[in-house]
Image 1 (cartoon, rainbow, N blue to C red):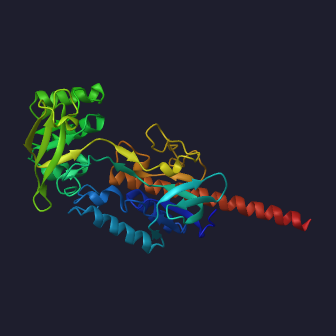
Image 2 (image 1 turned 90 degrees about the vertical axis):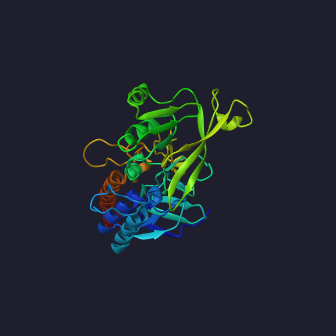
Length: 349
């Protein structure tokens, strides 16, 4: 077994908004946090070219710029930031044993999981190149930039319906491409979208899949190539004469096929995860809202929140997790001091 490199008072997994906010608060509380950046340094916000809804920046700023400012702020108060991907936490004893992908091992008195959730993508040509330049996984983050454009939403679940409904505030027409005939979304959202269809704001493209996104970083998305087959899943039937391939002019593409929480490293711990892998935190009122079933381990941001997934809500979660961790660490110190006093008293008897 690899010996620990060093002991840390607090480790934070994730360097997105939640993790960096937690680091700012924790560092100001003299908890000397170590932030491990993970697979996606800065989190999903680094894919957003402009952030205009984060309080305090009336002119807006880029996602990477906001992240870099928060890093500077966290480091100013004493946070250490290192690249490292957590693969395992041993919560069977204290301090925690935290193992990284490269074999590095730390021990920690407290741990904040702020490792986020990764948006699922399609892997079609043009998607990666145009991400942040007309391709997005967050309508509430980026929809307003494409006011007056036709927009395409890909997906058939609640998230896709909610994104499409939101985008009708800005779009000329919102197209929803779904690879099957039936949607997976709840009737509530299907009914809301049908009203938008009746009003001419949404057009549904059933049994249709996105094959390619066309455009450039300079000019954004120009159009997309789609495939349709009345029996569904047309990308698997491109040689079928019944499959129709066609181009559609749109100015933006929103991929809404869900997120995958980055919680694999918690699978063998006592932390409760829901059926899709999100951390189940205590919630409720008062202190300890970010606590998990494992004492000393807290959750913050998109790794807990599968609904809002906004920068500002992640920041709120991060601050709460740091405050909860501080309470825990103070109690731990008091308990340790009491135990040492009792041991010293017995030794004197």
